[in-house]
Length: 101
Image (tube, rainbow, N blue to C red):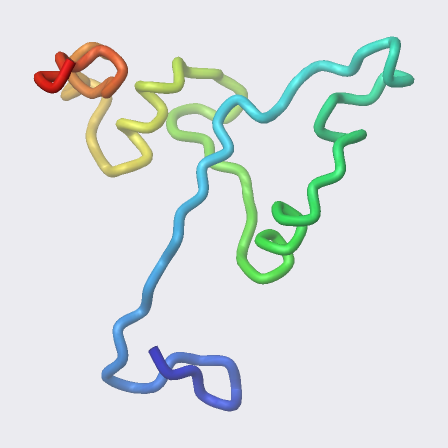
């Protein structure tokens, strides 16, 4: 990929995208941390660099303020409709039989 001097992608070049989903990264503040979360007190130079170089934001897969189970939120994030959700077992690799075991 060739980047132009103005920061855009040259015509005809394919744009690559890395999607980093930090599911479960948030936490509650803890008294031993002065009311801060573990993430707030952690040293995160790599995450800081990724955030500085890319775009960050919040994603609300359904209704803002309504927390969905992770597997359903991921399913919706990739463009599927809620009524198409087959259930966790079909998409969770940790639940998939492993023939090499």
